[in-house]
Image (tube, rainbow, N blue to C red):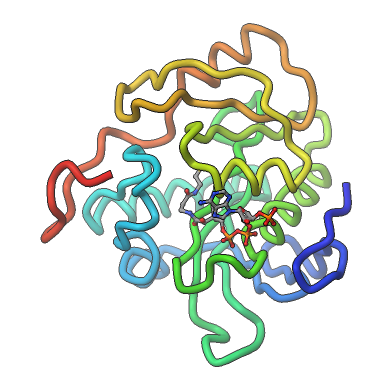
Length: 218
Ligand SMILES: CC(C)(COP(=O)(O)OP(=O)(O)OC[C@H]1O[C@@H](n2cnc3c(N)ncnc32)[C@H](O)[C@@H]1OP(=O)(O)O)[C@@H](O)C(=O)NCCC(=O)NCCS
């Protein structure tokens, strides 16, 4: 489903999936060496988890582990989360986020994204999500694209909505990390047992407080 971005052009995805571009973003498969820069430039900013405590990152070593998981998903499925860069402007080339569709199980794509706050509000979230949906539909169109976001995470829910996903179910946060219900979004109707399985699953372990971060934030 083409969604116009802020620049007025429809969502696009060009080049090979492991090194693709959209109108304004470079999207490439991660390598282990990206962990340090992603941890520093994206993950440790408290604004990226203030709406959902479950998004709070662990120590750098945990981010490295999450990245290794993504590298493995790329190897096994030919798609996973991308490292996101701007193609133009003063920040061009440096990672500004991570996100995309990956397969944590063999039943459904999981769409997730996190961008550096300095680039929020430019439509990159929608541009990335539309590209991720396009890629997932290209690789395994038989699998639904799904995403979970807490109700309080309005920007994330808006990105999901604008990329064509709809809320299909909601439930209390299974980890008790957020007072806000967890909302499951999908690009098609889902069988009830898959709904229950996806709602019970939260992608991250209970977060470890990173060095210097105040406990209880988020
Ligand atoms: C979610 C996220 C990627 C969005 O990135 P972004 O580049 O700013 O998103 P976009 O500019 O494409 O658009 C976001 C939409 O949310 C809306 N939005 C932004 N802040 C909002 C808020 N506080 N309340 C309601 N809507 C909001 C924008 O207006 C826009 O909708 P519109 O196009 O209809 O105006 C970014 O906020 C982020 O990285 N958040 C932290 C990590 C996170 O929560 N990830 C999702 C995990 S499920």
